[in-house]
Length: 380
Image (cartoon, rainbow, N blue to C red; front, side, top):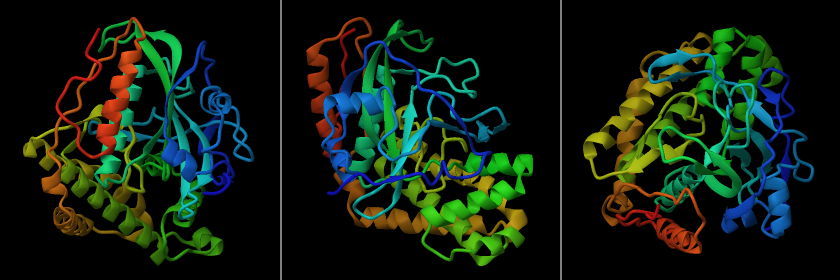
């Protein structure tokens, strides 16, 4: 479609939004998945296997892209409790580029790329099982027309990891997502909690410029006031996109397992789709709008001092949710896909070629928009 068009818009922001970090060194990186369609769409479709490993396993800088990986800073509500000790704990913003189809800003964000200042007690790693789950879930959601991050690629790292919630040692992986933004609700929460008004203005200006088509305030206007029409427009867009996300999840039968303000982005996308399931239960599906609305409260609380936003936003959320449920139903999504749960296991002790043949078959099924009930990679 054209040459790679890098951007340094986030790394050009002033200090206070992220920390420079280094990627972990992996003993034996082996490419396990590469998203050919999206590689072509961002101008990286002609990379050799060696270059893929160089950029997305060793994380050497892409041509003309940002110089260093950046661990993004944010706070968040986790399971209804505010946590100020968050941030990118096992990933970072690796690079940014333009979508060659429409000019949108896209981020390359990693998972399992090593420890950062926000890793706390974690090892900064990702299991191969987690990488496979995310690839299948994102392809399924995209096939169903749901706004989602994309799994750009993942490598098996050659490491053995210990986990308390699955048979160990288990195989390690490093994954790269491609998403329209990684600015979380928790990014605003952190600046509000720290009373960083100047950085809040920078973040609002950046978000309006890169993610929302609407009125753009001048730097002079933002320097003097954050209560103008542009900020209120951004708030309405954030809530509307959250409602669209809730409606589309309900129609697809998708249940996100850790829906918190530290992984929900202002562009209406959510990270960590590997911790979600597809299910038949309308009871579980009906809880998603309530949770997303509670998560959206963070934006209201943080922007209210600047906009005078009232609680009427909840009525807007419900209106948009109902409208988009009808739209998804009119497009046939509710009847052409029977939601089912993703369930699979990975052989933790050995590598079998048939495992990856089965992965490719199930991946193709997910991309086609219909994932049948079966156990994935069931041999131990």
